[in-house]
Amino acid sequence: MAELIFRSGNRSGQRVALSSPRVVIGRHPACDVVLDISSVSRQHAAITQEEDDFFVEDLRSRNGTTVNGNKLTSRLRLQDGDELVICDQRIHFQESGQTGATVLSSGSRTDQGDVVESDINNSHILSQVDMRGLSDNVEPAEQSEVHLRAVVGLRRAMAGSLSVDEVLPRMLDGLFEIFSQAERGFVLLMDPKSERLVLRASRHKENPEGGPLQLSLSLLNNVVKTRRAVLSADASSDSRFDSSNSVVDCQIRSVMCVPVMRSDGDVLGVVHVDSQDATKRFEQEDLEVLAGIAGDAAQVIEQAVAHDERIGQEQLKRDLELAHRVQQGLLPTKPPVIDGYEVFDFYEPAQRVGGDFFSYVPLSGGAIATVMADVCGKGISAALMMASLSGDVRYCLASESDPAVAVSRINEAFLRSGWDDRFATLIVAVLEPQSGRVTLVNAGHLPALIRDVDGNVREISAEEAGLPLGVDGGAQYTSCHEELHPGETLILFTDGISEAMDHKHNCYGTERLTETLHKDLKTAEDIGRGVLADVNRHAAGQVRSDDICLMCVRRKPL
Image (cartoon, rainbow, N blue to C red):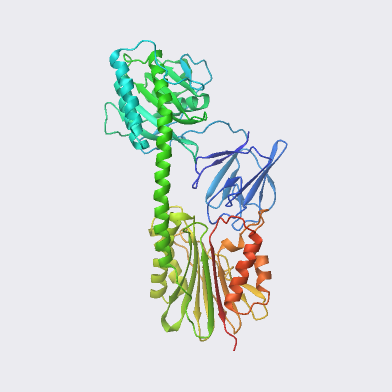
């Protein structure tokens, strides 16, 4: 089966199987592959399968799609190994992708160690326990009193824990008491978003403080895929691992690896214990005990995960409310009063907090800068970026007479803030009220519009638009100049308006916006309310996935 492999961006390492005849890639939640990046269009590109061939096409996206470095202008047949680039996402097309569960990626690092990738062959597994349909309390027929007491103590310790961070270390402590030959132990849990195993707890008998810990993906992949607990009495000589260099590299002599199963049969995680001492091997009896413990632990861990999720959601709710209050404090409470002008503004985040930003900055000589920005992402991270950006915008515009130079300084400050691969679009319109002169600087934002007295609309700042903030530290920006005549209106907006979708996933678009602006709308508020009402009619109750921001500055007729 063909698949897409993400090589960069926020989904780096992920694989997406092309299992449908048509796969749409875009920012909208209804897309088959969602890229939650503001520079990605709602419906950006599509891959279509026709018999054994796959074709890619750009869906008239704002920033385009490239294949092997060439901008896509028409439908193109994909070849195995082709590289697609959508904004900052490098995506490889692989025609013979492998299906199955995805575990930790090659050469990746967890918080607690390195991961070594290797493949496992399909040779006969000599010692195993099928965890599917495993009855509770699986234990060997004969156990020492000490051994049994340790098992009972472990179960009590786990049952008395609420959070995952309490359950898993207690589990490993108990396992080391039960299995005296164990030298290393790990618990990995499946991340529901990435569908990858994440190392959540570890223990090393010789290094209690932790440190770099190597894991074999061959073992983990096999256990997740088969739902079987695996025992190797001597992994370095076991025929199952002939092709697994990582097992040898880790110097593992004896290993047990057991899946932790959810009540619905899905894999919740994996428990892994091993020994490098050839004289301290695990036996079949040990595997059965560990399988039984994993069966008991599954319910406890599942409850702990649910507990942590509830706590996390409550904390997130509190954080969102705090971020909302902070964000509202950074936005204008009301439009400025400018002699001879009407001003209307509107802002509504798709979530409790958002990444759109607008402001008015008084300048020397009576001029005023109207500013609009759209930072990458949504939620708390976007709000933090917006807060940082708002301060830089006000300072740079107030201290620099040339708006283009000010935007260059804002870009430098944005990069110094350390937002990694994040970016933001920005447009600045400096209005000189007496003359009506408008100086515009565009950093990757949607072009500004000017509506004349007859309702005709012209687009400005499109050709002069520079790179978004955060892309290039050496980016230079240029100004363009317009005059706002009596009766004309300057309009700034974010893509939450132009890319609002109806139930058929059709964007509102700039053409419909132009048609709406051509209607008989008198005041700045009439214009703003008219646009918002038409956007709502188009969306017809569809859940918005992006913030909406709109500013209208109208020069009153003489």
